[in-house]
Length: 75
Image 1 (cartoon, rainbow, N blue to C red):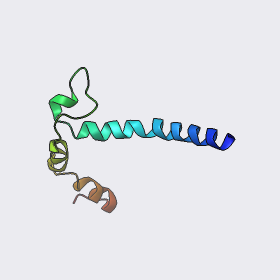
Image 2: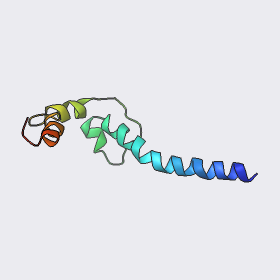
Image 3: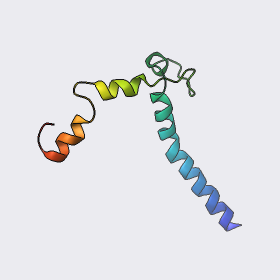
């Protein structure tokens, strides 16, 4: 019996720890207007990768930052 209680507590902790990550990923897949909507929707009506496209093309692009950090100079 104690074994099931420990398993249930561990499952509850894992759920609480992973839910913010799941909500963040789902929010990143929403169009900007839907992500900023009030009240929020938990599941996207339409999936969009625009946020990731903007991330890779912002200024010099995302690959510039890890490259410059690793080499100590601007790539």
